[in-house]
Image (cartoon, rainbow, N blue to C red; front, side, top):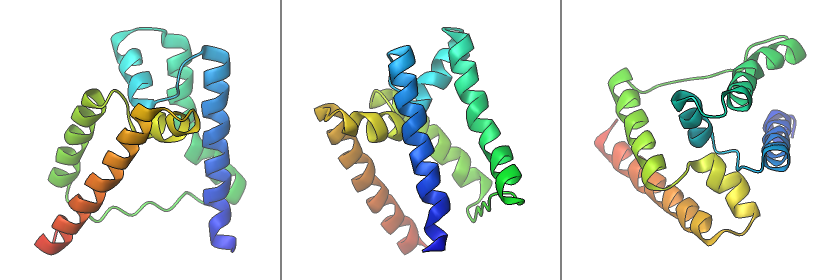
Length: 136
């Protein structure tokens, strides 16, 4: 059971931050939208604070647990870059990302978010299956 505490605490903090962002800003805490607005220069103070908060997370983890979070990347850089572009394209096409649709959209019973999350999951399952068959 000890292996789940970090994920549980992380999930609670994500939910808390998304709820606070909605209550205090009136907007859904979708990371793609926040970064997009920050890049375009809209509402920079709050968006910048949110992005900085995301980057400070590992530092807080280190302070609390005395070690850095373990991140293992086994894919090649070209595949990661290609995936990043596809995710960016998909978030624009789907009017949001997994954080906005999955965390707050589902909590608000948004039909668009339910459709988006089902699409994310189905596409992820298909992509992983194809990549594993291809040996990537």
